[in-house]
Amino acid sequence: GGVVVFSTCTLTVEENEATIDYALRRRHVKIVDAGLDFGVPAFTRFRGKNFHPSLSLARRFYPHIHNMDGFFVCKLKKLSNAKGPKPEAADVKTKEGGQKVKGMVNGEENISDDEEEGS
Image (cartoon, rainbow, N blue to C red; front, side, top):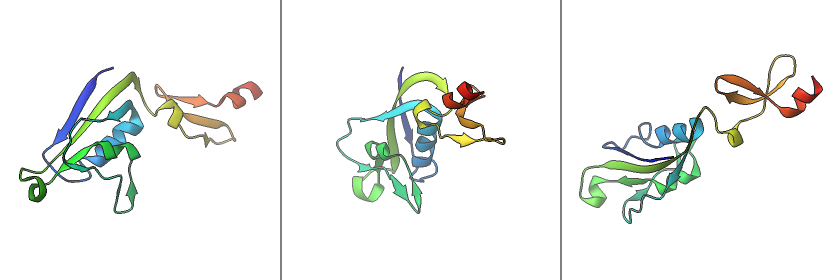
């Protein structure tokens, strides 16, 4: 794994929290503490949208509070090279015909174990 610091010079939720939330759902990464002792925790909820709770480790910096340009900082740690939904977060869905699917793994449907045994 590696570490990347995601930083933007914007305060828009779509470019910050929503982007990190997407990465948390689609890549095997986690947010780690950036070690910044100032700044405001990032949003975990905004206008009816709920983001991953670990986003509180990311930081927002506001011009009127911190006397600098506004920006956003989040430190991510890569857990594996896998793409797609995290295995532990994959929802069980039902396909046509009642076959249960846990999620997509490397572009292929991952059939639940109990369905494979019964086939």
